[in-house]
Length: 325
Length: 291
Image (cartoon, rainbow over all chains, first blue to last red; front, side, top):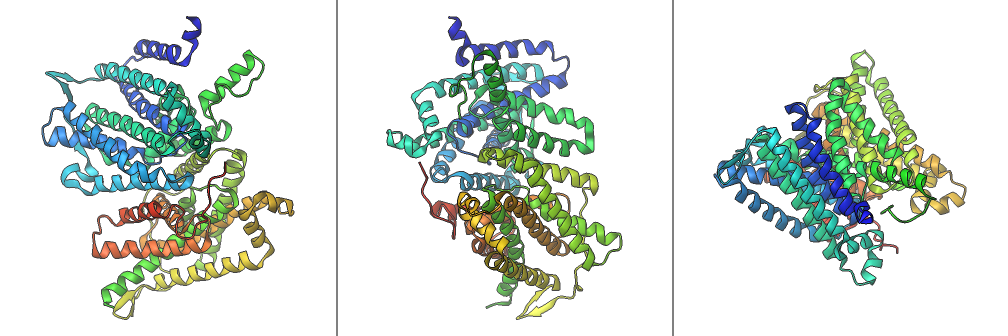
């Protein structure tokens, strides 16, 4: 029982649930709730993206594109065409999954820098289509979005959203942890260490990579839809290259191949700009410096680096377990 | 050949020459270190902005340009020393994030040193358009083409004839073998950042009189330069030049004949199409994965 509680799947999930349940004690005003909701939404994207980057070992510099498609899909269907928000969200998610599947096949044959280029290109193309087709998207000005309503119940206000996003984050983490421990997750890790090696033992590398790509795109799309309904407005900034970079940075900052690392990364890097805003003109420079600094001194990310420190203090240094390269 | 076509071709060549210079910067750093330097576009920005400032304090072009290039080269060397060198051996993703962090840092620094406005630079030699075969070309475009040609020739001499150039080339072929032959590969890596930064700065100074410059001018130019380098095949000098010119011409042609709204997107559509069919670009090394 105790051993089970210490495992990341049960224990970690429980710890996360406790944090989400107790956090409101520290959230003394609406502004804090707002940041917490943004953290949760980014964390959902990062948990999905981590499956692709951390476990399958494939980089994507274009995930803001999927986030944006989710946001704009929901916005256009629900606000312009008056669809019920849930139906709009579901349709958008399915469409994004189909798109990710279609482009994932040829794109994921590429490796390393070429994959980075292709995903970057995909994200930029989505961004440009969204800013140019202003008839539907409102162009650079953005588009207003109706609030999320389920049945007759309208979700509005930071507090309600906090619990909705918190619950969805738990679901996302639970799904990711289960996937990682399933045969498919082991296959992903195997092809991360050596794609040829994985294929030799009978793993269909292409299929598994595309699976991770589609799942991460779906997580991003759902988070995008939710973000659109939550803030009541979408602008192309959420689709831009810089947002893709922020998402990847969150995953790597927290620690690749660590689901809770992705959550921590999202939390830190979503809050950081709020703190740095106090430095006004110096905000951008400091953000860049923090990005460089953490990557130089903790190239494996915060959570694995700290976990290692903790482990090596508790026991004789043992290699292998928990490193999750 | 219609005058319109000639016009697009000339404009495309000018833009393409700039992409080629940026792409060469990407390739040189990639060859020395396998790092994709996403701060490459910021060197372009530093070149342009520094020249604007130096001209503003009254320096002539002949003095302002070398100083601005030197400033960018120093920033490049500092980037290598303080951000890339300490992270040696980190994974591709980590290095990409470090250089992107550097690019954000440099953009932030630029907003403090300068501002967030657009700055115009006076053309080097007048702005009376010259007519060629029914199309017009700005004297500045001729400067862009001429200087790019000179830089490409100088680089091919440098890499083909000088000891240092050959050492850099050897390092790109096989780092370990180069080290065994007595080449200081760390010095090569260090210098390659300076050289790339200088190339980027030259591009930024050349284009500033045509397009104006600002603190974030490097973002799109950096991405396009990266796309051009990829199109030609990352690490290939010829590829970078051909990729840059090809990208510039296709972009201008499609903006002229198809849709100017999607001008910037077209570069990336081409890149995706090429990568789907030729995963290592036009001139890239074709190599299998090592187990």
